[in-house]
Image (tube, rainbow, N blue to C red):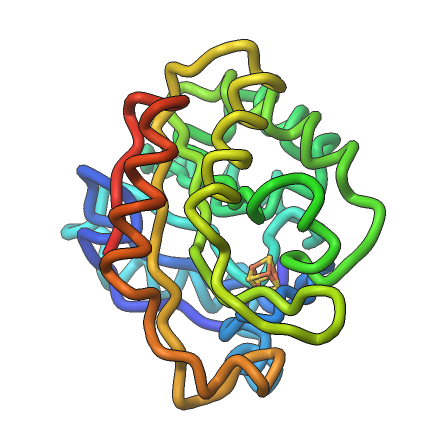
Length: 241
Ligand code: SF4
């Protein structure tokens, strides 16, 4: 599998665990607010060997591996990589944009992943704008259902600026977050999910759409208002600041 970087192990990327992080380059989406793509475009591929060599140096401290990106499910060798992590008695967390339900389904049936974090790119009608691609609505809906079947999981939405029709750019609104929460409930048939509304942080090292670089972080009042709306539909909604 292509791995652009092995990040310092930490307590943040996998709730409740100390995890080493495998950052995979490349993504099939083009979210305007993405900072990973510009960052990883220049990364050298360290491959599975480079990552597991790193893991050997920190194995006494970590009890999990997070696979993120980019979009890990577009990588050849993801399942083999997860199997190797498993064979070392480490938990596996996968961060995904939900575009590949077929891969999620295989990971689920082989029990290769313990925790999935899936991005929900706002309400359905905005997905082409928020994800930067057309035609992924069916796959994302299928993935919502699959993700809810993993042992542990979360859905999350970044309250980022959206390029709307007419080139107007403005943050996702609290009503749009409510619509995203309703969508999760209607597709999965349940409101018993962990759902995070999280802040957009403009990065100095570049975003996919340069026009968003002049935007501030998501205002705290908007995060609060989005939380208030979403919690009416998914009671376990939290703010990730
Ligand atoms: S933010 Fe969007 S473009 Fe960037 S890695 Fe995630 S899904 Fe891909």
